[in-house]
Structures are given as structure tokens and as C-alpha cells.
Length: 176
Image (cartoon, rainbow, N blue to C red; front, side, top):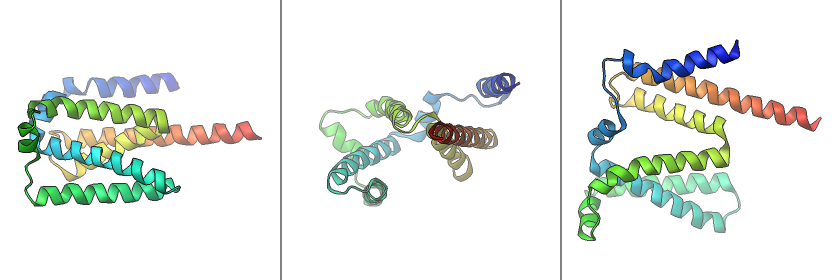
């Protein structure tokens, strides 16, 4: 029974392109997103990793380090955006073309997903991806079928929460 339900959900997610009127692919998503935004997002994640690493050496409290690093990275990226600092032009001046960002963003996304999977597990990865998709469908017009994206986000959140709950119950039952 559980395998049939899981197979139905998986097939439903994989076959959404056949049902939807939109043609969705990673390439068109990145093309519509724009090089400037990709550079800013990449800059945010690089800055977040560097600040998180530096503060992690000085402060022992990991949640505090994460909040401080995220806040500083968001403020720095927002400041660069508001000042109209042209990062793409700067990168082009040192020899990095804008087209590299179209390949860097998906690789960065995959790398972050792998790191989250190894550090936090599949349940937390699905939970975070679900929140991301739900937020993208609720607050932006990035996806043509935002309702389907929101439903997929909710399914990933529920599946991630279920896996996290199952993992905690398994750990608790193992101790006793």
C-alpha cells in the first residue's frame, strides 16, 4: 500500500510536464532569471559560506553563527543591489564571462543540495526544498503553474517532516 502511494506521487511529479501547458526546463528558468540576479545569488552564497566559516572558528554556538552569517550576507547583497554595483562588469573585466554564471548557478544548487543531504539528511533536504518551492510559488511569478509548484512544495514539506519524524522515533526507540 505504501509503495503504491509513493509510486503514484513520484510518477505524478515526474509526469507534470506532460499535463502542464507550460514548457519548463532548467535552461529556460535560468534564462528568464538573468545574469545579474545569478551573480548576486552566487555572491550571497559565497559570502555566506565565508562568513559562516570565519564566525564558526570564533563562536561555538552554531545557530547563532548561522543567523549572524545569513544576516550579514543578506545585508551585503542588498547593499550591492541598491548601490547598483555592477558585479557582472567587474567579473568580465577580470576575465570571467557572464555565460559562466548560467552554469555556475545550477552547479551551486546541486552542491548545496549534496551538502545539505550529507549534513542534515534527506528529510531536512526535502523540507528545505519544499519551503523554497512554496515560497517561490507564493511570492513570485517565476513559475507558470505556481499552484502546481506550491503543491509540490507542500508535498516535499510533508514528506520531509514525515522522514524527520520517522528518524526521531527510530532514534528514540533504539535508546530504550
